[in-house]
Length: 564
Image (cartoon, rainbow, N blue to C red; front, side):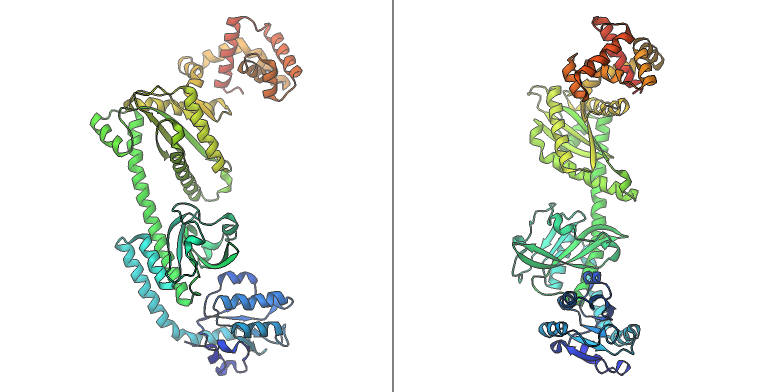
């Protein structure tokens, strides 16, 4: 393979000379690149010969030193600067640092263009690629064999660690740990640098936020520094991506040795193999989830199913046939769906969030006062809570209290998602569970239809609405509403008043004027004025019990008829 020393003897670029870094003359050259932007530091590879006019660092001694430092740390072959463009002579600080690091710094005569030099050197280096490509192909075949024989991500990671002689960490696209491989020669073990808990985050936001969003499109590793207890560790991060969709990351801690050119080819090979492994794992997970969902869909649909099948499948999926159950439905939706430009990615993100929520709910199951079975379907998380038939029945308030706790925790964990929870009643056996599921669905439907801002609601909270909606037709509803509260609604419509909502708060707070006014964020006297005006419109003092019942029913119809 071509070395830096060989450059000095190429007739086509005669006059190129070494200015510093004599001890690096044996550095091998695999490819030539141009640096005219500091951002390129992220993408440098070993054995690259870097060409530059010096424009980006001509006015900054600090940047001049950084260029030499970064190229040397990345095991680049050397730096060639075209003279008489921005430099009549090379800065002494660059020469001194290059000599100190043993990094070749060369001067290119003005008459040569950078494109000419690239063409000449690439022609000389092509022959060296045959050996490298053969090694790369052998590694690819070995990795592919592991994948085909079901070796899995752990064996692939071990093979990569042995190949590049450094510890390896494999993460999912959310930086949660999938697996890792220590290296016997590493001075500092991984366990002393990062938390090694499967499915938990490895790095903090201060590290991950420094990773560029366009990394998956570049599909090359980048260099980053990880700091722990005041010590700096050099890392290489490679995206595991297909069609710009990131499935995860490979992180190499360079605690044994710096990476060489073949190591980068190994990373690219492993990235491809791991992407296929992640796709396969996702498909297997989806099949398992589909089988689980199919059983629950049958169970919760109320369709006939044999007792023997229920007994077998319930045991398989963690249910107890004789337990009393109630159902909670957690509906979830993105607060800002416009932020997702790709609907496939949007769906994938929501699925991941749903999985995370299911995991969290299972971790919090001790607060349910019963055995929790949890799974997700579409944009809903289904929570089934069962208790032995020997225990007292769950009250509405107990069920709502648990649902509120679930909401509070999920809301804290997932800021970008809106959650709404419907709670069904408890039934004595698993055979009747479908009724509780139907009730929880009805709660979410009525919440949306009535435009209530409640986060957690029980089926019994909507008993009157459900009764009216199922037993009174729309014409009769409209007639009753107009007769009872039509004058108040008309006044609100014509004059922009808020008498209907004031009336709702009046009954909601059991005629307590102070509490109702406080809830509406208005002065007590303002509230009293509104109620007095409402009494005038109704020609009522709001004291007759039968009349009050009619007004309350009309307020329910006010929601059902979508007059808000």
